[in-house]
Amino acid sequence: MVVGHRDGLGAVAQPLHKLSPAHHRAVALRVAGESPQAIAEALGVQLRTVYAWFSAPLVKAEVERRSQEVDRLVNLQLADLTLATRDAAGRNVAEDSM
Image 1 (spheres, rainbow, N blue to C red):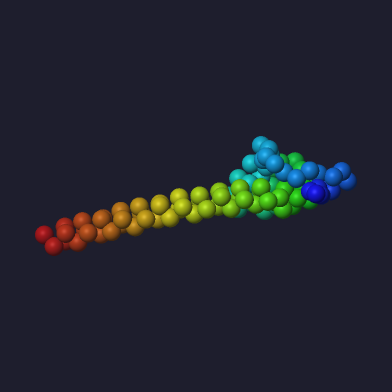
Image 2 (tube, rainbow, N blue to C red):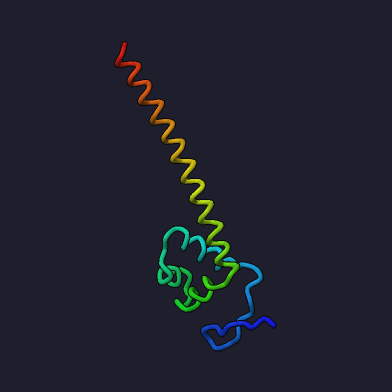
């Protein structure tokens, strides 16, 4: 038996099976570093709604997936910058030795 939770209006909310556009926006804001309060204000919902969303396994999984993607992209950019810096330093050393 699956038991829903009570939403802010006292109604029993059903388990989340699909993310809505509001959920996706909340996830994007959270991954960007916004606080739950800022997310609630941006989306025009109550703070407890945001906490309820982020307690849902589907939303948690999406936050984790997007966070990992951001980490992967940052690591790729750092690697590119490291290589570019190394190459530039090598060129400077070569020019100085001429």
